[in-house]
Image (cartoon, rainbow, N blue to C red; front, side, top):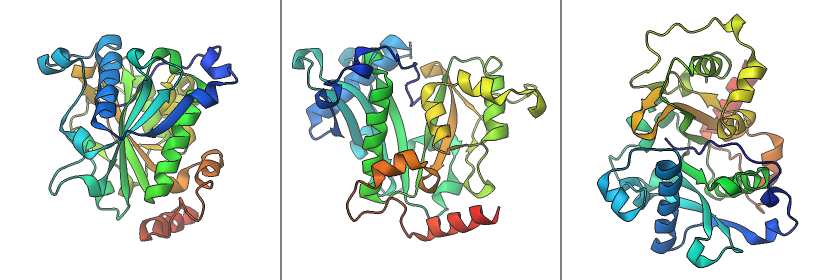
Amino acid sequence: MTFEQNQADPSSDLNNSEDSQDRIVLRIAQTEQEVRAAQHLRYIVFYEEFGAHAPPEMVAGRRDFDEYDDYADHLIIIDEARRPEDGQIVGTYRLFRREKLPQGKDFYTSHEFDISPLIESGAKLLELGRSCVLPEYRTKHIMQRLWAGIADYLADHQIDLMFGCASLQGTSAEAALGQLAYLQYFHAPPEDLCPTVLKDCTQGLPFPEKETINPKRVFASLPPLIKGYLRLGAYIGKGAYLDADFNCIDVCIVLPTKQVTSKYIRHFERKVQKELISDSSFNQNFSKENKSE
């Protein structure tokens, strides 16, 4: 479970107020206290709101944490208008760069998916995860600011390829079969960039035929963050993983930065003398292959 899923409220004051841009700040957490506040926010959303099963040590501290937090950058959304005692961090996103993982340690996603094609691609990798936002901040404006922050991070670190687990709420693979079939039929990655689930919760279930799927209708039913990734040009790896602890079904998102639409490239281009789309051998090869298709 990594991505918060609730719909943004287009009528929210945060979506429309003129001063919202001044009060909302995005940056990387700078202190242990800020990381702990982000973990507390994750606990509120994942365990108290969505009903994930919390181990006793997390209940005791009311924080969602694991060993990966020490190696990650934590992008945080701060509402400076809130009182500090009420918690000014209202959203967070966990970002892993490959070079920050200790020798021999696997990415978090590798617990659910075989990501060896991504590892072997030669791309400079970024794993996205543990995204959550408080309900009243799930607005179009906040999502745009969140993606702008990720965009700047990508430009700073010259990332070639993003990936991570994205969640469909609920644990019934049968109920999610239409959505999962749509993702497999219409958003499959190139074979050389295709993660494969380690234990497929749809195994043995009858997938609907491609011709019976209404793409627009199914797309509209997807969680907002998955829709956002698909709009950016993301692919979905093979199979789906049942994460019973988090009451969800995970798919693997794969997003080469070459695929990012012009809307977000404008954010990247604000970085003076920096290129989002680097001249790495991965991006050169990816561009050639896609031109030839």
